[in-house]
Image 1 (cartoon, rainbow, N blue to C red):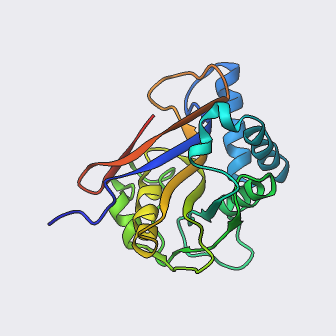
Image 2 (spheres, helix red, strand yellow; image 1 turned 60 degrees about the vertical axis):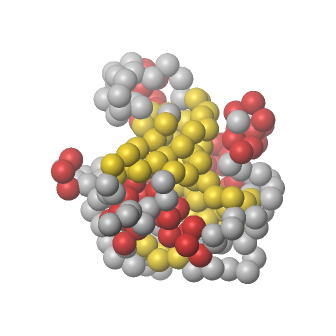
Length: 213
């Protein structure tokens, strides 16, 4: 049976972190990652302002801009009132600095999945599992460009599953995904915190995503 997942989606990111590096920069990269995941207002504000100052040179104008609808990526569990939602907070900061037109809550987690950071390697949810547990709703206010916003990305399973759901309700929009921070797990150290990229997330094998870079 053919996979329901998008074959690939445009992807952008701005910061990097090293999961295991021991250098000062690698340790700081994990502190920055944790601040983003914790939704610290000053950190998210500084990231958004830094991207805005360097939008053209970073290449992220392909993903972000004043004509883009931003859709926060759902967390791993259904949202409850008052819960932290870093993707939504990041999207709101991007709108504040002119890197998005507005924020629409078009994606919803309807069934909890294990958090990849705490699940054993073989039990991490793949892109198809994320697709199965996310619901998308259409909104007449959507622009012709739509970008899903998340706090960080590893392989891209969550973002590919979410993008597939969104593509079903917005089949004619130019769809992309953005993560503030991406892991560089294949190399032990990082040399800098800021390393913008534009690439892709795709279905590498049945239900499994990967990203480049």
